[in-house]
Structure formats: C-alpha cells, structure tokens
Length: 296
Image (cartoon, rainbow, N blue to C red; front, side, top):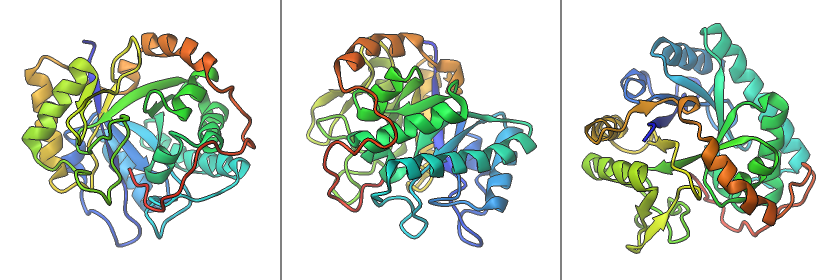
C-alpha cells in the first residue's frame, strides 16, 4: 500500500495547564492535530506547538472544535450552523498565522471531540464543517470517517475527505467510536494498538467491542490516517509501537497530504449523490444528539 499517516492531538493545554513537552510524541507521528483555542490551546501554546511540529517535519493540521474550553470540547453545543462556520474559520485563521511563522502551513483539517462525533450524524453541523473548509482553503483534506454525514457532504462539495482509524479507541458495530463513558472505549496496550493499526492499514477493518469485524474504510479505498490520542495513558509508547509495527509490516508512515487517495473520494461520490443533498450552513441538523459526553 502507498502508506498511512499517524496523527495525534497536540497543543491541548491552556496557560499553565497541559503537557510541558510533547516532543517525544511528535517524534513518533507524522501529523499534528493542533488545538486551535476553542477546546484547548492559547497563543503561546499554538506558536510553540507549530514550531515543534515544523522542526520535525510533522504536518500541521487544524483541530477545530465547539467553543467549549470548560468541557474540553467533549460536549455537544447546539450552536447555529452559520455561527459554527464562523467559529471554525476563526480557529483555522489563528492557527494559520503560527504555522506560517514556523515556516509551515495548515495541510489538513480535523474536527475535535464532540464536533467530530456529532458531525457523523448531524447534517447542519456536518455542513458547517464542510463550508468552513471550503471557504478557508478547499484544497485541504478533511480527516473524518466514511459513511457519515460529514464525509458525504465533503464529497458532494468537491473536498477531499480522508478516512482515518483510531488505534486507541473502541468501535461500535456501526463503525463509530464507543463513547468514553462506556466499557471498552480505550485501548491502552501498545502491542494491541500496533496489531490493530496493521489490521486497519491492510484491510480497512477493525474488531468492534462486540467482536464483530467492521469495515471502516471507504468503498474501493483505504484508510489514509491512524490516530493516537495524546491523552490516552501511555500515548508515546502506543505511537512508537504503532509506527514500529507498521514499518515491520512494510507500511510506510507518511503525512496526510502524501496519502490522499483520489480513489477513495471518487468511489464514494455515487453513494454520496444518492444520499442527502449538501445543504447551506443554515440547514437544521439531521439526527438526534442526546448525550452530553460525545468525546472523541
């Protein structure tokens, strides 16, 4: 296979709170999902994280979220879609300044926490993410999960959605993430995470918490990225094991832009056209969002 990106959420501090040195984690990944200030991150942290990422040749991605510092972006916020578009643009613009100062640039976008999970089913907020990326830079890939509202709308809008898997998170039988409040939500054993990573990269499948083999890759395509969360216990060891396991399996670790698969996008287009039409940012959300803890 062409390779796969390893990404992790970084810069998730605020003021005196947060990790003092994320260098060891950045040494193991190829892409940094940098918090843009709405769930975590402040100007000092954004600049420091971009500089550390650029110095290592790690791709910088905008990890955008609901405006929810107190809840770390893991709570659903019923914000009007037009406002959400503006809040996402605000976050991407802030990160862009520091990425450029570091001699790099934003090379992809990924939603954080509740927004990531809610946009899988909520039409209005999925459309808001797609609209914000289109307005900021429609050439940027959008990391998300196939067969979700945000994936469908990204394809319809002509964006490049990139499918990702989560090596440190449990999956439901529907191919979505198990809520953090439920058993089996976290995978903390590095060897198990490495085995899952190789399986995901090779087959595009994962074993759910119920033991079912679930397809998480787009039809006719492959996963483009694997995520290791920085706040998972033992994250550095997990990321190192994943990278070593992929290398042992002959799978190269690359940046998201380097593994962008036009096949994955093209093969999903017909299915997307058969689904709901892409709405404007003011379209009301589709699907119920009842839980307050919807963290990624």
